[in-house]
Image (cartoon, rainbow, N blue to C red; front, side, top):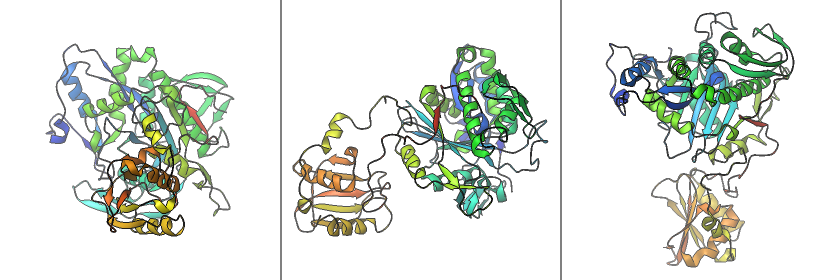
Length: 508
């Protein structure tokens, strides 16, 4: 059954969720800049909010289509935390003139997907492309049906990523669950766009400038442009983001690079004065954006989109990095059609995003570890035999406290350690609490376990089972196993292919 879609009409009673946070705009209020990061091949646009006051906002609200997140999200983005938005471009052929593209009967699969991570301090962002032909495990997906009931769509092992949407009644929330399963990153929200959105949004912005390093004539995508710089919109823009046989190696990975170049150009266009100072463009974008995108149930009002846009609008395009999940050809195939994770690189990319590390050399507004915090690791270290520590499980996999205890005692000589069971509450990050006179012990244990300075928490000691003061090590959800360092990476690997939105790149 198709996902439940909700578009409020003039006669339809608005839900309490839709009323929350809404208040009339002041008359003659100047258009406020709202940067809304859209999805798939159109990813980003500017909305004009507040133009024409309350009635105009009501009109924009009526344009919005929302789909249940089915509990797969974090519950929505938060202003004081890092933001993760899942942007999904589908191959659904809605709209006039789109029936001739490819599989016109497609239910709309996850054809182009980007996980957009925006740093907590809003100084930088990473747009991580997920190849549609990546082999993944799709989990079981509880999904709301049109009659309000819930149905669990069975998962698939070793399936193409793009089948996480549209296949067997899967909705965007299932793609969200698949991304969480794949990366360990739980998105806050999702946005979905289809072919028609590419055309309407590029037309609304007045076209996007792209550069070709060679002549391209692709009969499959209908793109026919000579070498050089061109301003494209509508049908031509759709042809550009769909072409793949005429660029790079002619596959989906080459098309991803082309789409990243397109989105970078679109970002530069949206941040230009030509767009931001044009009320007519702003209104056209507001109309096109609210009609073109399907959002999750946590983003079902213009005010919520406005709040998200204000957070994203703080970014500088030079600190927006585009990259792709590192993959290799599927070794199980003789004729290469799919890809699998590059296990030597992909986990580090996921760790960088989970730990809010920038892929660009950007000076953070607030450093993660100030000098006083970093100093906790500096100084003398006690012998391992003198380290007294109680180990608690605060969200790590079951058995982690015992396996860590065994490893510390047998392999590392931390004999004065004990398993203290489960912590009173789960923690996202592993912590080590210690009294001032235990700082040398804390430094030794941090060195053994690979704890960062921020994991060390000066506080009080506790009494262990022998009646002796001891430190408290609480294994959080970030714990990966005994002997695995918990110090997050501090920069992107040099061999990861990436580009920033401020750079002009010509498609080859």
